[in-house]
Amino acid sequence: MWITHSAGVARAMAEWLVDGAPRTDLHGCDLNRFETAQLAPGYVHARSCQSFVEVYDILHPLQPAEKYRSLRTTPFYERQKDLGAVFLEAAGWERPHWYEANADLPEVAGIPARNEWASRFWSPIAGAEALVARERVAMFDMTPLKRLEVTGRGALPFLQTLTTNQVDKKPGAVTYTLMLGEDGGIRSDLTVARLADHTFQVGVNSQLDLDWLRRQLPADGSVQVRDLTGGTCCIGLWGPRAREVLAPLTKQDFSHRALGYFKGQQAYVGGVPVTALRLSYVGELGWELYTSAEYGRLLWDTLFEAGQSAGIIAAGRSAFNTCMRLEKGYRLWGTDMTAEHDPYEAGVGFAVKMDKGFFVGREALEGKPPSSRRLSCLTIDDPYAVVMGSEPVYVGGQPAGYVTSAAFGYTIGKSIAYAWLPVEAVAGTTVQVEYFGERVPATVAAEPLFDPGMARLRS
Ligand code: THG
Image (tube, rainbow, N blue to C red; front, side):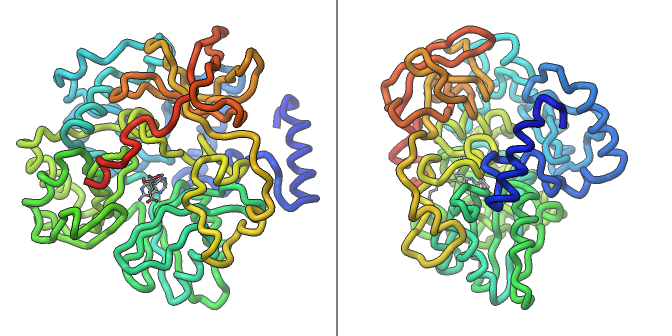
């Protein structure tokens, strides 16, 4: 630790010793956060040297590391390179942020320019990809989204105890649920797909979730947790024309009646055995299609070919994570909400079922007084001013909170920022975001900004 941080470190350590948990979210320095590949001695050395050199630099939030790239690639990597993918890295994975092959989309011309800082590691192509996914259909490589298999006769009570939502549903059901700490703070948000009585596929956020679940395993061996991520892959097939692409490729019924929102089923797509989960972090009709790694290339080719007549494109992380996710108001754990926040103030209280019986964190929530802050949605009036996240927000001229995620929402045609703000800053309140020394006007908005009636997802 550098001396600038020492007093805060001392406070966190004292809280840890006295109260059992620090009040500050420390997941960013938890030693259990690393993927196995990130523990290779050469990797640790290279990244540590880089951190030392950069300690006082102003780094762009998307600036990629140069050494130890291409550690983890998905089965679609060659296809993505052929489409001119521009890759950035996370958790060792190479992730396409946009595809140069989409440069010719007519939508590119209408994408507003950005200021110099916000236009780094960005392209107007990303905006066009977001629009095409909303108008037609797109394939997103979701492989790096970490997934675990939880099995055994104790699997259901294990997940019921550790998460907030009701996951005791029939096989085929998918549930959005939260893991809390004893203090009611959000440790993570997950999707739990019940594939069979004693088999669950759990979509998690990071290695920290795997570590936490493993440490909670009952001693009697009645539950097993396995990391499926590296041996499997996933394509998110999303957009209003997604069903038109998928239906001719399978004998399984993918109609809304047969496979509703937040439901899953096994199927063959072309010759490929998949697990299809009907949910979408970008808020469109479609499925996460999982298969084991050796079928990945065929799954990609099958969907891409079948989708041509519907105008399918491959779309990248830039369109996915910020533009589309923020329009739908979906929270990103670790950025929008952490262990410092409870589910209600973070806007995910709907995933807490107080009447389901015991779960970790329940008691703390029962006694909680109403919160004085809320994760709020802002729109920024000037389309050129795309902020990046972590900027201070002023209410009535006083610093009152900070931005978590921000992006331009191409469908709604406005710049969006999520921010922690006092509850008094209700929808319609004018605030200011400090960006490079200037105060940029913004307005608190009712959320979500896109499809609040869920017509898209439930079609
Ligand atoms: N897919 C899968 N697992 C995941 C994610 C994912 N696990 C980690 C992370 N992403 C979890 N985050 C979310 C956030 C929102 C939603 C899904 C995963 C979502 N929410 C609906 C909503 O708020 O409208 C839930 C509706 C409901 O509960 O009925 O879809 O991307 N597999």
